[in-house]
Length: 252
Figure 1 (cartoon, one colour):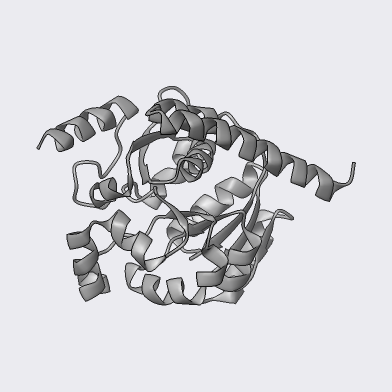
Figure 2 (figure 1 turned 180 degrees about the vertical axis):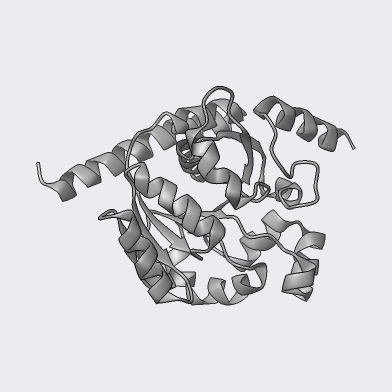
């Protein structure tokens, strides 16, 4: 079997798993949906838009897990050096090339960059799974961050990246913890996630698990307002601690 044919079969298999997870999600079985996708071993093409601390670190871990990753940022030379250091499954390109390349996209840029990014990539992100790690920080991002915090980061990002199947994840854990978590044994640290699309949540959950974390779906994108630094969900928590925090937030 040719390599391209094998990759296509792998991706079709992954989507079947995600589809099964979606059915459970629709019936209210969020934890099971996350687990079902996370059991998948299918290798994907992942486009990274913003290959700094978060994007570069996560992309590097996914390369080591066997995925094909294209890194992109405002510094193509940096991306080329990063890709060269990671081997044949890594490559570099422009943000548009990364968005076209990826079956899944990870966006890790300052929040103030999202409006222009949404316009530049509008035709490429439509219908794709997009993992949004960007946090609105008023001191850095200005008025757009203030607006996003008032609206809720999940709903704001969905408005700025129209047409994408958006999942908020990796927003509350520092990048320095990521390589350590990928090698950790025993109880996993939880990664709270929010999304409206069942298939997107299932796909993202599988990728979260491959980084060495336990995906914990806390609800729809409206819950994304809690996935920023300074909220009770920021920092490291066990999956059970995350669920207890979310229960408390929902009661208040």
